[in-house]
Image (cartoon, rainbow, N blue to C red; front, side, top):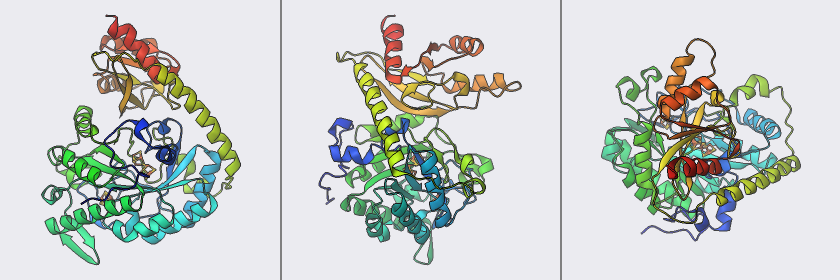
Length: 462
Ligand code: CLF
Ligand code: SF4
């Protein structure tokens, strides 16, 4: 019998609506850009790469790069000591006051490196008490550390769970290293599975919010993920993040070298939709790097390389940060009010269409088409505009050679959308977008407001 927590984490709720959340739960996630879709428009996170070792082998990882459970494959982060990491966090907290969460997510597994991971958390908790601590693990060693996690006030833990059936797991994990022994094949996968379930349940009992990441691997676990979704829901997971396998031969992974492909956006959305009736789904994950800095859609890690941040002073000020957060909360409230006004109370049946949005944050259509490195995708009907995902694209404004090919690539990425919502777009790309069947809307306003206006004028009035 699975024990349900007394409300704090509210994890086993079947209701996807934010209004079903208790006020205390809302307060726990309102500044976490991964746990709250709304927060990710306004608040940033950073990772510190303090955990090099790993204790399992995933077929989508070759260990030369960051842990692919929480990162984009093919990225190498700069390894830091806990003391260097603490200095970096204080520097970034001063320069980017909207950075509210510190995550440890690699480059290996944080709990295969418990001393470095927990020492880093201790240093931050002591000097910057307003920063939320977050941890991402493969789960193998999680049951051994839940007490320490709780004691350090780490309120957000992610476990990557790709299967609940070891026969499926055999195709993903060739070995597991557990208590000084290497277990190959199904024997190792069974240990991993049992430890993941035990860890998840222990988090629930300790009232720590748990997100589960699952890597969608077509032909291996695509049909199986609804079963994973059910198992984690029953054990109190708060949020499910189904992320696409990114696989290429140049990453040198087993899957990459053997031609295992990742899902296309439609396949990803289909599986997310299948699971979404049961629990909250995360659809805004950007598969960060182990030294990521900034809003989820931006990468400011190069501004804070070790060479640079070691020479910067740690200007952390709780008062200044609180003042900035107050301003953000006021902006959020204004955006929420406009969003609410855009919801059509008459619940009429109407077709759903997808629209692509160029945004640099704040919940607004506010980015030039040529500067967009990704588009947010919203599903719109007569009642609401709902965020359903994002798609990365190559930079269009590269100048000169390759520009045409890049534009074609961008159009192909959003070809299933009915409109592009952007602050500005040049006449040439505008023509190409229209030729491909997209309505181009130039605006500077709350995303939902622009999306609903497009829908009313171009879909309903046709
Ligand atoms: Fe980092 Fe992960 Fe914490 Fe977020 S990321 S440890 S929960 S603070 Fe977020 Fe990045 Fe996706 Fe992870 S977008 S990869 S889900
Ligand atoms: Fe790589 Fe992360 Fe898997 Fe370890 S847990 S093998 S670092 S993807």
